[in-house]
Image 1: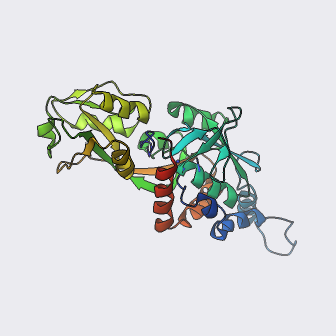
Image 2: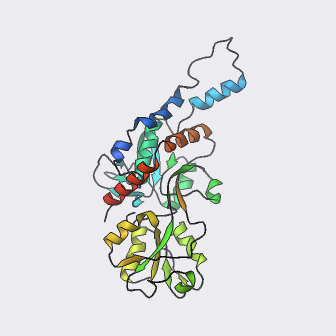
Length: 310
């Protein structure tokens, strides 16, 4: 998720902020974003010296918005807890899922999306889509922004503009306590193991760094990844570091591998994405994200972990 990554197992629709996602989404610190809409309003005095460059800057500021400027359509899977998941009842942490009747989204991504929408003077709604379809849907105009546990990559940057990260995760490996691999600390000690990750994410990609193992066909969702380990279909799974505590609480027979070998490039920022060509609004969203303290981010994550579906 980070999605490149994370834990649908349950490991943001309230998504990066369950902590008092409610409270955080209303923080006055984020209201600064709305000030950008004031720029460029009204004609300049004829003798003000405003040149074409100034006028262009004013136009950019005035157009610093997404979609219709009223409803922020947020693309996500709504199946990638704690980043985002679907529920049947509204709460202070949720937003409606626009394309699923009677459904709502919660999670860390959702909480951050609410903060962003509030800073832009908009109301957030979720649009439930397959993870692999999110960037295309953004460029087709079906959604205005992606908040889905997605990490920026060079390939993705070719098709969309990404914000600064609003949480950072890493990838670890999980096995069962009674597994032959439970004491492994190096990649070499994993030789022969069947290792599973989530499709279309870094959780699957990094497995290629481990030699002499059975890289299994990835599962579509985090819950399916976890289910395969629980049932014994695989020996090891890749998983979200931030989500491990809740996973081990739910599955006491699981254990995290304490590896001295580390995956390269496995740190996963959670970035929002918008269509290219919206530099003014990208800057505004980054200002909103910068207003979320590290303490608040961790608090939101912890609360999402507690609230996510079992």
